[in-house]
Length: 168
Image (cartoon, rainbow, N blue to C red; front, side, top):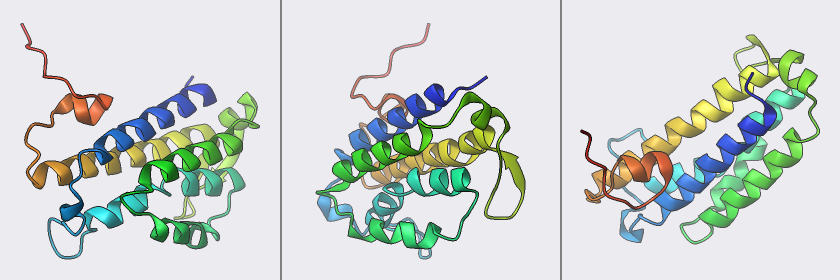
């Protein structure tokens, strides 16, 4: 079983990778977006600053009515304060998750914004964790698209600067 400790460790890794990727952003590229109708680089950073906390809170409380209000704080995120906001978000998620029991994680019923029912632990993994990985990948691809061709898989999946190892 994927435990709450595994969940929190995974979110901490996601947070650290996002902060690493943030360090690769040129301030001149904050308005970059691949096409009309997509978020800009800055809007993506802002979204990332709430996409761990908001669904975690809503799933735990089984109430999505606060999601829009909770995401409003993300509009205050800038390139300069992104890392601090990511740390604050992770701390807030830990405050929500640590009091949960194994039985809450494995058996408490919750629902998605669509109304579909789910068990809390898998819902946190399938919503919060997977979505954070997807948006982190989007950030990586945006940064690559702005000319940072030296970035590689290790930057995206481990949050480190290192040459790709050769496969034998």
